[in-house]
Image 1 (cartoon, rainbow, N blue to C red):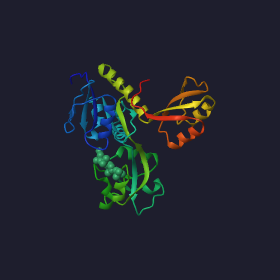
Image 2: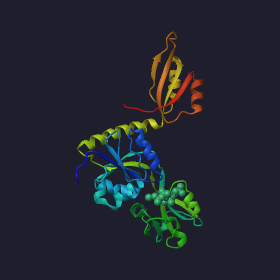
Image 3: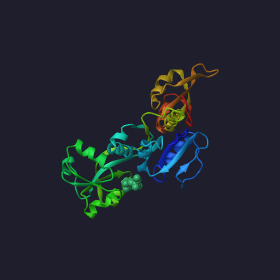
Image 4: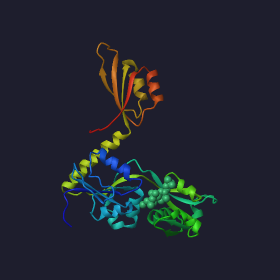
Length: 297
Ligand code: PRP
Ligand code: ZN
């Protein structure tokens, strides 16, 4: 294989992770020549290209070195690592990305009660995640038969090919539509940035580090708010205690009003009306809550 000097990121071609993943990369300053329907998107600014593929193929592409990084569900990455222990060992979840939240759960027919793992003893459980399900069964001392299905797992109980299923649940609508009940969560999942544990030692490693730093900035500010207000000095202690996430505020004196300061603070998470009203009662006024676009420490 010819050595590459451009970083290559794999992501889902079309699915739940596609739009938020594209948006996240755009926020990191990456632009790609539009080609949603094609496999390969050329990066215009930074030397970073995109490969649009089936999500299940992403860990393998990283392991083989075809791609350097991937945006993929934690469930897909961990399943790959469990079923490919040799190549999977060098791979890692580099960052959780905060979108695409779902869970891999065991579900049973609605009419069945679920009162613990022992109930699954000797049952047939259909899944596309034999690695993760197998690990859960072993750790709970359950001996069950894992029925591997590539798709449409949820209809297996109705077809009589399984007694229970282990599949992804997001809203829960698929389970309800198939008269199934979520019994127990096997893995909590979300989109993650996956990569090999050792970044490439050439230019690609440097680009990857730059991208990781930008990503950290984006993730950090995504849910952050900058709060600005004027406050009497003697109310500062009380107001600071009310700031969401307890940040250390920056204080600026106010000309002509020695007893007043302008307070500025970066709050983790949103700031509610109630929290603002509490701060106002404590003495704050002229409050502003602003979204944060970029941050570089
Ligand atoms: C997943 C999963 C379920 C469904 C659950 O499939 O296999 O079928 O989503 O979502 P819900 O709880 O909101 O109904 P997905 O659409 O991701 O397709 P895939 O499994 O083929 O990747
Ligand atoms: Zn899939």
